[in-house]
Image (tube, rainbow, N blue to C red; front, side):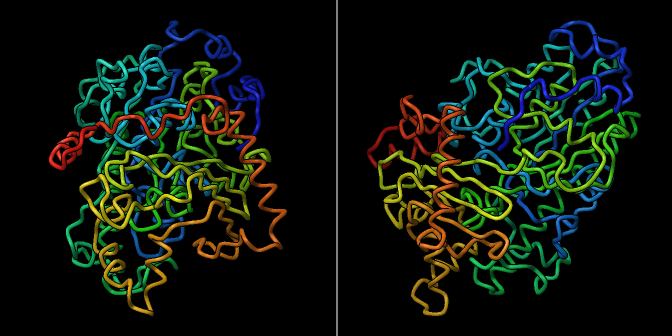
Length: 502
């Protein structure tokens, strides 16, 4: 990712840039929970979509999907062009956001339908303990069972609509609200995209999916839910504006991983790991800027804490973005933010029944290269063809839908079989892609002798980062990712029906 000491961010410079004045130095230095001047601390609206990936926003270059709210936030704030998740799966991604840590540090929280240890720093609770009013709407933390990790309340605070929260909140306190959604997660109403007016013929189909009408229509249905999500955030902004709090609110809008299509969600290619990210904060963040600094969603927790005057816990591997947010200019603000690391463990139990194993992989992304290290290449990356633990059946690590069905039905068609192989087939231990020449990352260069030096260099850099950040698979710590329970009631019933127990 990058190396930057916690002290390298100048509070004095930040206070001067943001207009808090040097008198704010004592405010930024006080301990969590201490009294602070009312009105000094920003509100936070964290808007997180479910399965919304890059580049599906107008400002990101998509010419079909309409995202006026996201485009507005990018225009009035900052668009991060290289934002990545920690893991392309709901629970580990959301755990990593809350804790500001890479997913593999979170034990059972590294898997879908896991839990979250209450003893790990949680930025929502840290803000609450420092005097913030917190809450959430719809899908925030999860899915999983937080009580297994010791939580007696929701990790993101009480549930309510944002309208109710804004009406009932203590106006003497700043707020931090997790504005969630289940859009654009499957299932979709088939044909909803075309029916809404989306031009199916203009939909972009990535190189690893067949350019067929059924696939285009499926993507249009996904776009329909992206647009619905964008409109929901618009309504939230109206509530903040009516309260006169727009310019005193840090507004973040992003997604938890890529779209729910083959080789996207649950995968470490850009179509699974890269997400839209826009941040607006009134006059404190110079507007209309596109930054190429590599950014992780784990960076958000320390950013929110720093803005609130709270020192980020040492456990957080993410680094505050305030410095790059508040500088003027385009492109790369911090030269050390020149790569990103992410990975995955178990999404759903999709290997041979009754195995609870996942598909462990790690990746490093630079301006030019994506290197993926598949740690168990004998396993099936999208799940086994048949006989998986999961009730979704064949290739259960890939959400069911028209595109998946079309590819599976076409596996014996000589013209289409390659899509089946690239989406569902086994993969080598090392994959290397030239992201500039091959943006959809379908041409693996790892076995080409001409790239042996590149593979070696990237692999060593990835391993060093994983060791430094205490990934159990790269240290002497026990590796238990395949042993942690999958805390989903529906799976328990399915397993019991087939004579197995979790």
